[in-house]
Image 1 (spheres, one colour):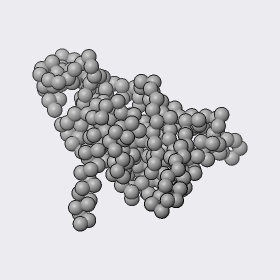
Image 2: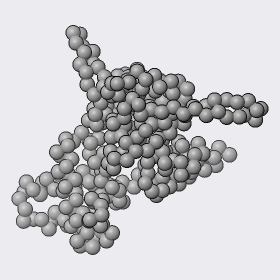
Image 3: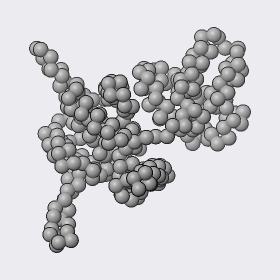
Image 4: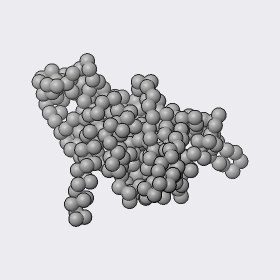
Length: 293
């Protein structure tokens, strides 16, 4: 990664400055195997290590300086400084969706060992694929139930319902709808009841009971990340918010939903990201079909 060459070129700096830069780049080396991703995934990696927000900002700034140095020397020809914040090297491990077995372990744990709010919140992430910031911004009126009347082959008319979330994309202020077609009937009723009971209330506010009092708190990014870190340690399964989103997309594609619909429900502005997930999901589906033949 040329980090040694980079640090050697900064020998005029103080020992403390060099130690700071070396620490930041060591975290980058822990994360990467030589490929390119955006800074969001690297930030997520740093959060999972339990670093404070100020330390994360420091690490990102140092990594940005390193990549600018690489760019100036022609090592990264495609880095466009004005169009994108910066890029970091990544591990060659591809994104992976949760398996059905992993999801059972995760949700069984949440049902028995955690406050019910975390089960509901994770159910929303898994079945809507929305980003963490968008999930935290949801309101009770954002759940919409659409009913459809369908005719069967026996000419019977059956009624089906689809739950959708009206999602605000905090980064751009745009809204879109995320469909939740893979909910079980029990999960569907659980979400409908939860959203209905939270009318005129903060959706993610909850209480912790103590012997003489009840403390009211609200879910936020820190509490969610800390909970998933604990969940990961307890179950041995790597759990983080964006993995629910990737799982949602993979399951939709494996169930036969079109890339165009998946793109719409994910709120992707272009088809590129959706098609990457689609390609991976279809490859896995073909491999499983071959193994089962």
